[in-house]
Image 1 (cartoon, rainbow, N blue to C red):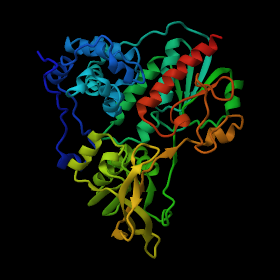
Image 2 (image 1 turned 45 degrees about the vertical axis):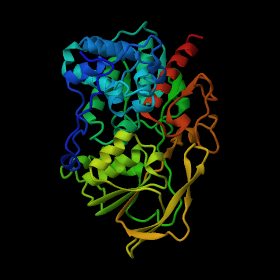
Image 3 (image 1 turned 180 degrees about the vertical axis):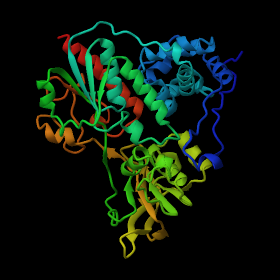
Length: 464
């Protein structure tokens, strides 16, 4: 029997020198014994502070209590009262800065491993598919609602709207669902089979998913209203890559993180040589940035054959926005880190291919608007290093297509984000939005929280 003094269970992972050569999942998840011990560490606070850090409002202590009792079916049912994508959240949600950061045990030690427990319960359910239960809608309504974009925001909004009883159609421009979950997160962090399984659960709730339909091209927003949809949710995400604005970014061998990961994920580069995917990887790969996307890119490059794969980041490791676990996994996989370094130019050969990158060493000054210490160039510190491939992973902005083709939508002129009110409604009555299209690039769980909030707002709107 564990207590709150029992050490936090360590999540097992595959050997770094084996896993950095393939795309099999890195984290192995808790064993049943570990899950029960970890769940028994929870002290079941009456005020449940951890719940305040969950964007989708899971009753965390209640599901953990059920795990401690080995009632895994009850635990997954408790989670799914609020979260329709638990196997995904248990793998990619940054619990350490959300629910776990508010855990009462965090004040004097290690918080309960909420994310690992959520993953364990979701994986347990997948192992016993005959026990899966699909909740019935509260009431059936003969009202059509359209959801645009099958990423985390759209999937969540569609699932909740179906459970409210609406006839929901989810329009996706690609041939598979998931959005950034599918094209932006590598197989070794989120296996496609898990994403497919979670999508099937969404469909089982009554959501009709239509693929290869690009709203703004195939159909307009006006067409959806003409077709009888009474409300529309826009969750098309942030697919517009940002660049550095330095010389040489148009050379062959320079990718945006978005293009690089999309080619790898949607064109099956992770199954090479079965699929001959057009992704050029040289011997030396430099990834600019230090967020989760940058870690994904550099670890993918290593697996695709790069002899030297490195992170270039203008601040120190302490300011890196990536999850600590992702940083540590990258270090274990022999990724090189060059902190306090900023690229200022990419050089090419006579064929227009990348051959080197000129960098400038930095030092940290006073904090800037982000709260992080501002990088300051060190005069005379320029140096050139040979590289074959450069991947720019410094963020991305909202997909602009719908805003460009629906002129009445109010958009922030600087960021390109759709403007919404406190009820998630845009400037057009009946059109709602949420996730990265309204905030810029964010976390999966934040987008899910936005989808959940918007679904509730749509329900209120349609009830008058």
